[in-house]
Image (cartoon, rainbow, N blue to C red; front, side, top):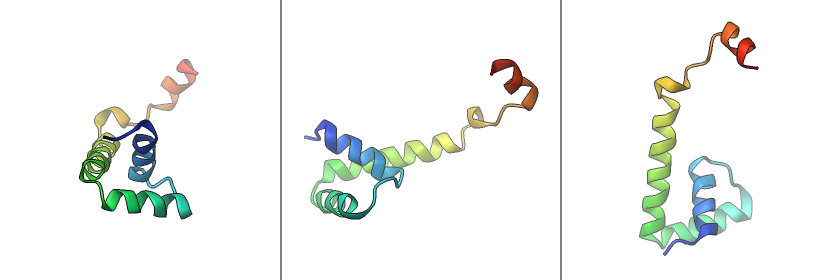
Length: 68
């Protein structure tokens, strides 16, 4: 079972936001845990699909000025 800390690390790992010893330790855990591997894959796929979503289109400057 994946605990809250592993889930947080999986998210950071999927987004390539952890480094050094923390990354090394997570990759060691990842290599031994099929459930954690599936979670990382799911998170990466989700992040990838969101980055190409039509909702991620930058707002025109006029709209930005009204909102801000």
